[in-house]
Length: 347
Ligand code: AMP
Ligand code: MG
Image 1: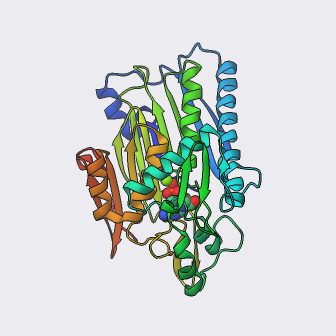
Image 2: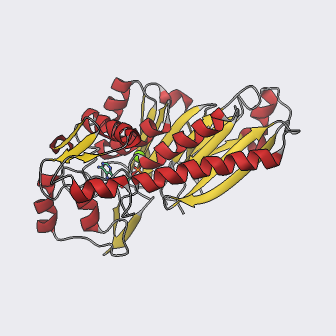
C-alpha cells in the first residue's frame, strides 16, 4: 500500500483539536463525501466538503465523473497498456514522427521542462532502464552491470524531438515513461472537473500526489502529514496547507529486496541504478503535475542539489535522507519554518 503524504482536517483528529478551536471553527459544520478507486496501480481518493444540506447523490455523481476523467488520463499515459499514446510513441517514434494529442503534448512539455531544469536527473526517456529492472512487471531483479551500461546511451531526453504535435526519437532503443508525472496530471484533471462543477472544497489524493481547494468552509483546518520513510504507520512531520499541490517521491513506494539490498523505482539516469541520495522528497507547487515532476527530480538530485534547485524555482520542499538511525532533512525556501517534525528516528 502506498501513501506518502496524508492530509486530514485537523478537526477530525482528536490530537489536533486545540488548533481547530483556536481557529474558532465549529466541528463538522460541513459534510465530507468521499469516493475511492484503484487507478494507475494506486489507491485514489476524492473528498468533497459540502454544506450539510447539499445532495449527496449529486456529489457522488460528480465524484464518479472526476474518476472517469482520471481513468482517461491513465489510458493515455500508461506505459503498460498497448493502446496508450505512450505505447504508440514507444513503438514507432524511432522510425518516424508520431503525432500526439494536444493533451499528451502538454504533458510531455512538463516532463521535458523537469528534465531540463534538473539537468537530466528527471529524464522522461528513462523507460528502457526501468524495463530492464522489470519495474511494472512481475519479473523484478537486479540486471547485470553490462546490460545497464549498454542502455545508458539511449537515456537522454535531448535525443527526443517534440515539434508540431509530433514526437521523434533520434536513437534506436529509446522509449519514454510518464510515471513520474502521470498521477499528478490525473489529480489536476480531477480537480479541474470538480471545480468546473462548482465545488470549492476538495481534496484529491493519488498515492503521494495530492491537491486541495479550500474556501472559508474548510480553510485553516488542514494539516498535511509526511510519511515516515521507514515506518508505514508513522509520520515524519506535518505542516499546514489549505490549497495547492503536494507531492512526495519515496524509496519505500515501489521496491524489491535482493540479497538484503533495497532496490526502488526511481532511477538515477546517470548510473542506471536506483538513486541513493534521498529517501524521500516532498514538494509544494501550484498544480500537481508540477509538484509530481519536481518531487521525482528532487529525489534523484538529493538533498544538496535538490534544495538548490527548489530554492532557485521558488518552491517549498523538504528532502529526507538517512544517516545511521536518524532522518536528516533539508528544506528549501523557508519551508523549515512551516514544517513540524514529529519523528526523525529510524528503528
Ligand atoms: P514518482 O513516484 O512520482 O517519483 O515517480 C516514480 C516513477 O517515475 C517511476 O515509477 C517511473 O515510472 C518514473 N521514473 C523513475 N525514475 C525516473 C527518472 N529518473 N526520471 C523520470 N521518471 C522516472
Ligand atoms: Mg513524481
